[in-house]
Image (cartoon, rainbow, N blue to C red):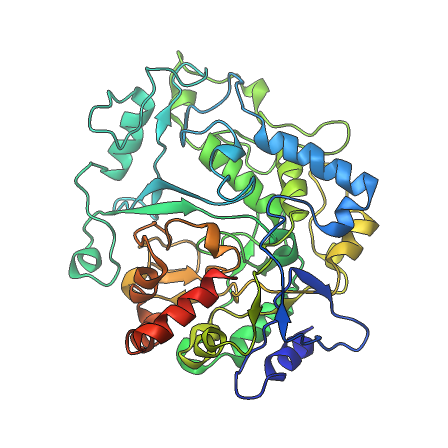
Amino acid sequence: MMSLVRNAFCSLAGLGFVFILAGIADAGPSNRAPIPSQLNGPSVGLGSPLPAVERNSSDLQIFITGQTNFQEVDAIPQLGPVFNGHTSCAGCHFQGALGGGASINEIRVRDNQQPGPVHMFAVDNAGFNEPTSAGCSVTDPECMLSQCQLQEVGITGYSTNLAVCDPSSAQFISGTNCFTGRQTLPLFGDGLVEAVDDQTLVGLSQIEPEATRGTAKFVTEAGSSQSRVGRFGWKDDHASLRGFAGDAYLNEMGITNPDHTSEVSECALNDPGLETPLADEPEDATDPDGRADIDRFADFMRALNPPTSTAFSSNSPGARLFAKIGCADCHTPVLVTSLNPAAFIPATTGGVAISASLNQALSNKIFFPFSDFLLHDMGSLGDGITSGSAGPTMMRTAPLWGIGVRTTFLHDGRASSLSSAIAAHDGQGKSAAQAFEQLSPDDQQSLLNFINSL
């Protein structure tokens, strides 16, 4: 697969990258990507299944069931005890269509008394019921904090006047506590991202320019003994959609599951009035079909269609500027999936592998995420969080496909426009930001128009 990606990169001499502006395409038996000069058509299909899934009744039913679970509002007594304020996956993933991102910020706090950041939850559910007026956000100065929230605040030292983390600042280096925001990530096309083999991503890190070279982060997910290249989450914490779903179900909604069987907050387990019956752990159990909720969520995400670019010629001024100033060094335009994704996509918690037809739908496909899915040192733009081998300044390259439906940008939503997002790039992205600043206003607009079209 790496040779195909290299071929695609070399196909347009002078640009240094290739645009095949369509949703997905078969790589074909020649092991070489086709190079159409342009794509015509509106951006459509967000939230819909892959065309091959739509044509297969069995795969389509699995997608629809997963879609239903993704939207389902959890009103079970076990919700929480603390969670992030939404009672369904769809409560955060909705921008553009079901499965999109959102401009919702959640809070993470640096904790200098613990070996890593502690996740802060927004809403309390002390009575193990749906949130009521008694539950409120820990970030709200008027909130009367519950026992569970007080425990979290005590652990982290959170207060409403904490500064935003700047990992390049003297205050951060000296150990001053700080907080960072995390925006909801869009999920469109993530099944294709999951279907890229590790060697392709490692290979990208070897051919990128030295000054902007990314780092592949190897992770071992819960429920697995195999180390693989991470590609999901702001810090590349997950290699699979099941791993991504299991972590989110626990950390965003406080629901234990087959991959994460312990509550994220211990306060409920230590308080007789709030104690959760151990027989209820995990709350998300595997059903007779071999699927738990986290598997259903993964089913839905895996089959989501990627964004489709609006009409734009690969020879347009904006496309050429994208390469010229260095955007394409990290925002890799084209990737190719494995010939056999089923070899590494994990089975469900009940041991059910992806279907042969879905494997074929994901196999040997060219797609256009505009990301290398590697970690890069972003200097002051880092979130201050250390997660495994990803240090405070290290961030995953955000995919640019579908960016036109976003309203805020960067990991914490600090940028309200693409131009301000580019200007905030630091570290390995600083040279591209400086080159953008030096463009004429017309050239800047051409580049912004191009990015918005992806």
